[in-house]
Length: 414
Image (cartoon, rainbow, N blue to C red; front, side, top):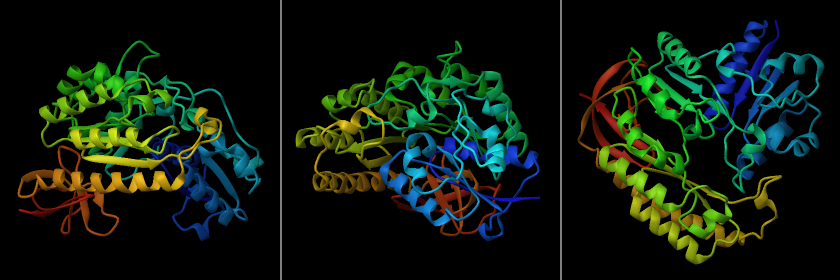
């Protein structure tokens, strides 16, 4: 029996794909090992959404090029040429998971233009968190995005298939369900339904679990604003909203080919925070997009200071292959770095103050797993991560928040 070592990088969609990779290959007789030195085959499930991430992936591939290697994930479509300069290892795109064993046996690339239904694939879930893709691809055409080249146009999975996956996960012991897609907001647009209808069905399911809704673009969150707030009031959902605005400048948003303005983002975020004072608003910002002036940057700073999100993911722009932005005139690197540093300082202050509001509060949580730096972690109802020393996974405990950090909350059992 051949042993496989699998490493997963990137977003929750990649994590969900890895659960299916394990399920498929185990069904076909492969065994998995955490020890890379004991592995006959090494599979890298890669991310290439950012240039820096892509460079880390390529460095990893160079280090492993003499192994029996298979490269999956988004990198095979985003920058196949860069990979082939390093290795002749077979590439498997995100549409070809069922062909992994063929890639292993033949050493040939596996690409497909068709989206398989990943919810009907064998799945090897681990721990108390289950990641469930609701769709593959998206409807956008953002000027900077390489992920669209990797995952294509939207294919939504049926409400029935999603519900069955949630039920199966809960029956297997999952306490947290993560619904994921490139843009959960456009779920169902191709099959005659929508995200709200799906969430209403999930809210009716029995079981002890909470659901985190993955990223949705501001225009869809704005379109569904009132219905979304109602659904999120159910105890089956975390009070969490991830709406990536990308810039506070209307001019830059147009250059990015984003299908929203700052108004949609701001109104949705403010309505959410009013309804859920201790919920979490998450957003993404790209600094140094081509054409960004000091005025544009100040508009982004002003917007962030006004909205005060709980989580702000900052990226310095770097062009992705075969995107419209690749040929645009770039902002000088030093200027981008300076702006990124300034925004990061502002964001850190905002996040700490948002977290400090929970110090002294008492709440119930389920321990979801071990922390990366020791101890254990759970979540507040607003999806803020809390850490404590004495616990066990799956345990439901009552805790008091004793201190706040940029990355979460320190708690102790009551």
